[in-house]
Length: 142
Image 1: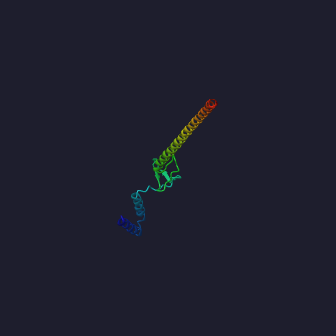
Image 2 (image 1 turned 135 degrees about the horizontal axis):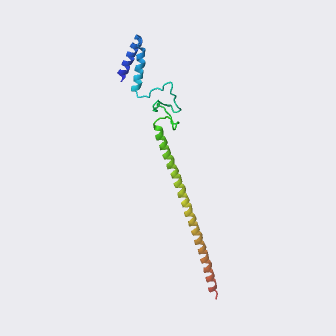
Image 3 (image 1 turned 30 degrees about the vertical axis):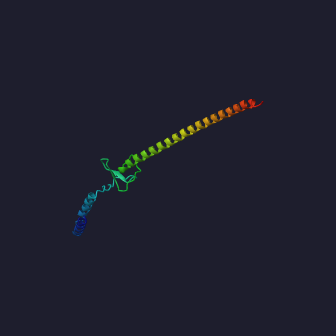
């Protein structure tokens, strides 16, 4: 790869000296196609806030540092996946909050029932003690 690059630089230098400057721009365009980078936007195409633009057929082309701030517009391919994952996280968090709230409510109702039963049991015990005291007091006198 390095030799190819060095060779193209030397050839372009010789061609530049001999007046073949137009060939060097073609070589640069060919080199950019080989690197897999999206073609630069034509002057008529404007990039949106995400750093992307659409060609005449509606295909999106984005720079390497494209952002995900343009829902519904041309944006990097991974943005929709990121939104879906974020939505799943939010749903899971909301479900957990609802389950926690439900569990706390159930615990409160169980505690309230337990307190009510304890109160009733205590009242019954007090009634029994008072009956026992009434029954025991008259029979103990001679």
